[in-house]
Picture 1 (tube, rainbow, N blue to C red):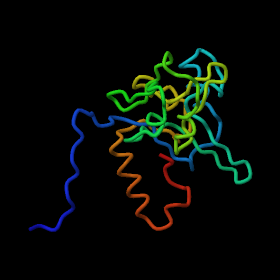
Picture 2 (picture 1 turned 135 degrees about the vertical axis):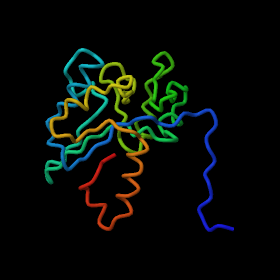
Picture 3 (picture 1 turned 90 degrees about the vertical axis):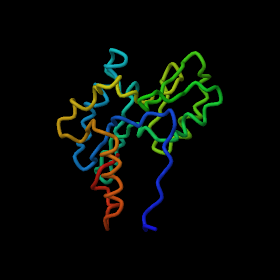
Length: 175
């Protein structure tokens, strides 16, 4: 018998994630052009409060970190919704049925990556939908801190990064 890892069972009826937005916080300058592009793409308004991507700023350390939905395999935000207003699309993005949403914000609390926020007036969740496959934020990032790439490549880089000594120093991808 060969000594190898057991094969993982394949999910039936679920397509793999095709692409995802990944980030390299060490390249982010905190200019927030990505937030403006996102809000304009969704609402025709330039407002960071309406963006699905956020720049988390640590003013004391001078760090700026892009925060965007990571398209989790088992999204806690979807599981937390008591009205089933959130669902995963075939491409892996999280879709909102606003007619079912009661504005309870349990999805916001459930997201382990702080990638879900609430519309300031509507009370519904704001979650990255990858702009239907053509994210407005990525080309607006002048430093290349954001990428839109195959999710499998992003996952491989994350595994490689976590296997390296000192990889938790914040200098790598903030996928």
